[in-house]
Length: 295
Image (cartoon, rainbow, N blue to C red; front, side):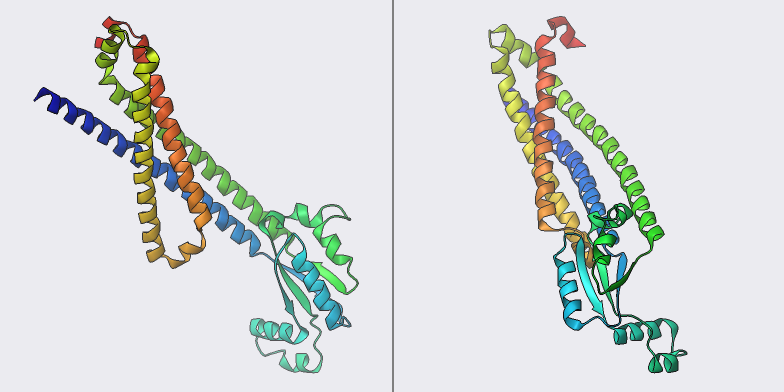
């Protein structure tokens, strides 16, 4: 009867530890998912900024195609779209109405252009205006058929500044919550080891080495970390599925590679934190004197 009660207590303690680990790891995984998603959203915002390459009126079609292919092959361009003079006229009339239709019918002063979307890493004024030789604007302006390269410099600065500020504050919040989560896991494992302090002392008294005593506790701690990570991953998958059903566009923010990286990180954190906390807790009770075990 006593053995059954003891086993029940051990099982109950292990289950409690795994549940606590899984909830904390779920919180960390959720924060990681939000952070990674926020970075993708920030990149999407940067890549939505428009840049216009205006072309000379006498530019030949073959030269325009050559320029567009050259831009598409460059490392800084995400996408490009050629806007002919007629299409530019249609766009303009949609924006301002039909009041200027007679004027544009007789003489269309709007130039043909190539609309660019730069990759997120290059969508900043430093990359665009970097000295007169290597800057993106300078490279584009060197082409003979290019009349001008225009963009809203202030808008680019504003977008980058606000995104950097938001990510900085969010990153600080993530680190703070991570410290709290690690402390919670550490305390949970310490309480579980505390209940076995007399067993550790008994094994020492019968001649067991510290390594022999520590090994099963560490192995159990690592397994609990893995089990907790698996439960946390299942919760993350369920929550993500719920958000995708609720907000279909949420699928654009996450991808399989992001999820695999996040899941691997959750498992790694579960193992490392459990191993470190268990090792330190067992080490503490191995060094305590018998009288100190009662306090």
